[in-house]
Image (tube, rainbow, N blue to C red; front, side, top):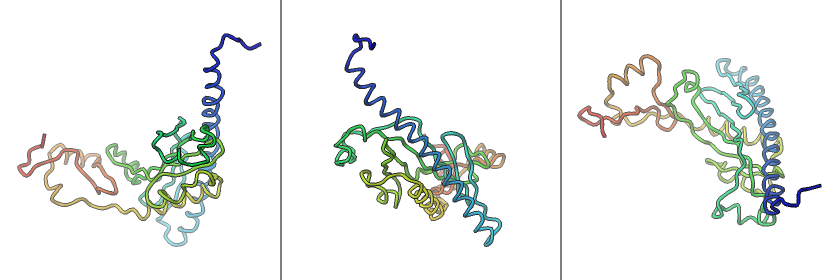
Length: 234
């Protein structure tokens, strides 16, 4: 028989909010498994087709464990990372204006999967200072309804949380969109004058292990800023 001395408010919170979060977590784990399936399938399909055009262009899928997976293609890597926590949003967030969420506040608890774009060489050469870019983040609730926040199409393509369910077809669409985004996002070099000076320590670092901090947007950068007299700025 249940202990009647238990605080009823605590029991109520455990049976609603805590229980929902645990269920959302389990749902997100299953969703992430399907992401891995789609990533592997897409990588194999692309690799088989591109080999007929250029054998030097390879597309690979890498399973990095329970909460991470990646797809590698050309000079890019996209890492899909499932967060192990469950989230909701500040009351100012637009999600609370949605009638689907207003009907049941438990629908506002979401698992999160992040998509990060890195240069392949950043991981290949272990350049720890290199910068990756967050392409988008996928939020999925207990009903497998979802929406995506992110760059370009991700900012508006998947924003119908009441109607969109994260099935294999939607997952494939998200993965393919992320690959297209990365391929369209080219590595660019920074302004010449902003990198006219370099310290002995920096050139030794570059020569010994190629750890020049790199991102697509910046091309490459040095951590220390140098003024026109060659002295480090404070």
